[in-house]
Length: 308
Image 1: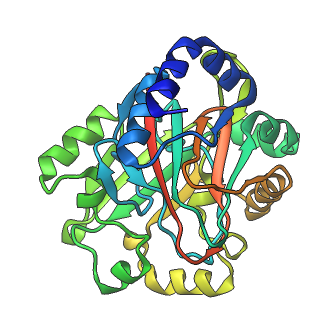
Image 2: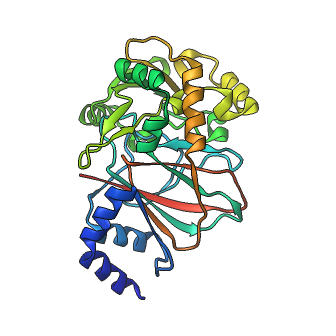
């Protein structure tokens, strides 16, 4: 099958694709002639399930390839990226997220996925109700220019990279447009804050899903491993430069055992998806969670997002 035939199929079977996404949360396209970032973007356009959105306000280390297409999170190879829904810490989040395998990993490096409906159902009711009742406050801080240590770690982006502009007034406009609270701190550091629920309902199916980044924003050794945890504590020894923090919306601390329980539930519900060259994975960003397994060798997975 040639690319034009695939694009025609995506058009004629659009309803089937849409219904399948709502049922399963994700679809894998394999053994189709998708060769590069531009063809990946063309496939997304022909799926007709939303308009392209940029990664404004997101701070995972990525590079922009073409308009609307980025590299997937460029964290250290040996690091596992826990499950999450993209931009669940923001009021504006993509409805769908897409991945394209440009270079399969030499060893491991699977994209991990899970059903957010099953995560919701599997979390201890006491923990779930505590999160639902209190809501969550996500705080992030970014320098104007990254220093030497931040360049080495790649994780701590500048606000110039997060908002794709060097104009502070444009940053403020984008924060307001995306309903993000902000303040400018000492030495041109930007602090942003967003209050979000921990559970939402899918806009079409009305099913409840676990939908938050609490376990990502908490700095803990279970997620990072003791080496990275201690390094992160040293790098972020000043509170006003700490990349991420998460609290209940009333400002109280989230019990660490609650976050560890959530991570354990996610590990139990994780599915590992091995990559082949040319694969395209389509996920409903509310119904499905995604992450990344550690890997060796080269790995290049591209990503894109759409919204309604």
